View 1 (cartoon, one colour):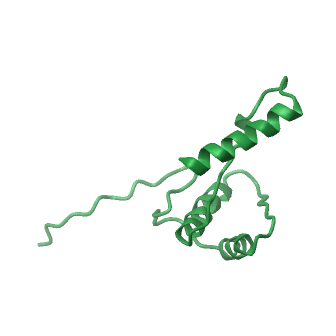
View 2 (tube, one colour; view 1 turned 120 degrees about the horizontal axis):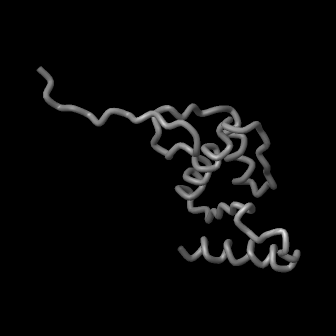
Amino acid sequence: MNQHRTQPYKYQVGGSLPTNAPTYVNREADEQLFQALKQGDFCYVLNSRQMGKSSLRVQTMERLQAEGCVCVAIDITNIGTADTSAEQWYAGIIDTSIYCYYV
């Protein structure tokens, strides 16, 4: 009898999957985004809710960082309010980028 037990996988609904999630499915978009970013191309990912955009970002950042790239993820919904000026909004992006770089 095999007495070695592995931890059961807890299926995750919603949110980005961790890089080691056995349920993550690599898609053509994974390689396309990775290669384009490595070449320095401007990229954006558009899709419906719950279609894997955040998990794609997590996976791609992990791969880029493994190759020595510095990556910063900015959630622009957390920068400013309706009263925030354009200058303050852009300053928030710069501040977040600098903070992420040094963390």
